[in-house]
Image (cartoon, rainbow, N blue to C red; front, side, top):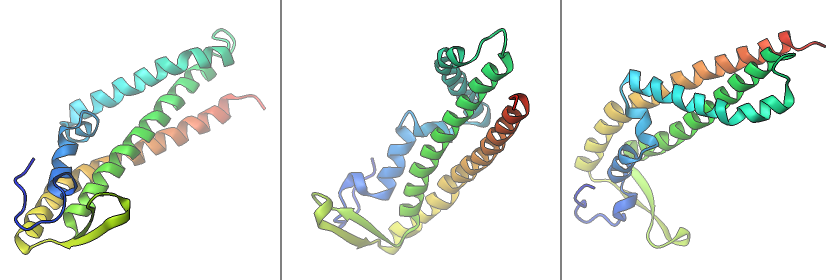
Length: 168
């Protein structure tokens, strides 16, 4: 964690720069910071794991010999849906930290939910945190938005294919 900002009443764990570093160190949130190949690889592995978990449920719903396409489509929809939820969670976490890095005033809690305060950042702290928010966190958010759009399109295509393959 960073050295405390002089005269800053915000607890260390609630200071935006420390929240940013905390996300970078988190096993889950670090996924969004990986190089493109590693980022994609982790997504494929998590999607595959989701498909494996969904396989027994899909097998009880669809016969592998009579409705193989519905079985496979169920696995892909589950995998895509779970990946979408994970990316949404990543996006929400990074977007929260980005917002706090870019804001001039931040809300913090001294001892609990009932005693919240606002603190205005000094200019040097604000400038440093805005640079980090703009050049470090916003590209992560752009990547996550692109991932969400792509996964949303894939999910819509899978659902469309489901309706095409399902007899009416």
